[in-house]
Length: 152
Length: 189
Image 1 (tube, chains in turn brown, blue):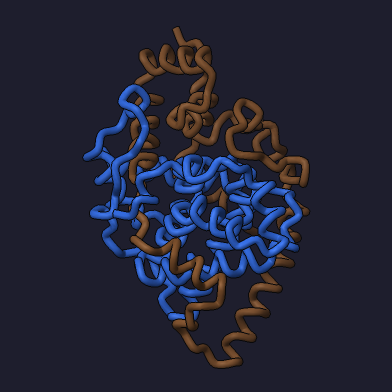
Image 2: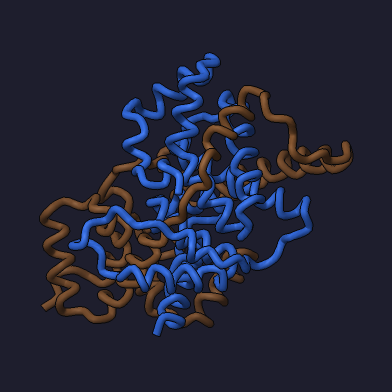
């Protein structure tokens, strides 16, 4: 008998794998995984992604620290026009960010989350989700159509 | 392999971000250096996942820190510093890609760069070989799906933070994540 919904288990997969859930939740998820091969398979993929961390090139931190002090000459010399275009793109991007964030539901300033927070992360009550049984139940084609609608 | 790569970010320094940011705003170089050490891995992993090129990814990571720490006055704390920094890292990577005319699907094989994960055996369901396999499959995902999966699973961001970093709605972040995972599952079988 499943003690937890598949939706919830998959939503907290990152926190479970990072051991950021309490003992009670951890035990409930384990019980669920023993009886749900589908969730187990999905968590195996998630676990593999979590494990696939990349090495940082040696000395990158020191290089960045030097750059912050202006001790590293610019490695690239861009034409002024290109530099100006980048600035304009950044300004435009910033405006876009605020526009998008203003329109996004449940993504307001009060939604800021700090690392290490637990159960409060998993809100599935945004307007987009209401009425939808679960994203995991949709096919790749249906999800792609949904994305087109969201992007339009 | 850098020593930094072996250390969880939390172990690099114990002082919290708020305190470090306050000091960095006053020009405290040591505080800025601590922020670099704390987040260099997260930033590099983000830029290299976009660019698929180690050298360009280092350039973009450097740009990200220079831009972010040079603009701390504009950080309002609406999101965590990490989310804000990763958004800047994504923008830096895309700018580097555009300037170099290399905006294309990631093709670099990064499997050899995979390092051991610190997660204990109890919580690790996948195997090391699966991690290598995933590494070879991740570049096949479209950028938004790839980055949604990476930011959610490797960086531990909540969906609203993934959305903020990717500059999309929270709904789109969720769909991109689920699409990415669904495709990876298909390719793994």
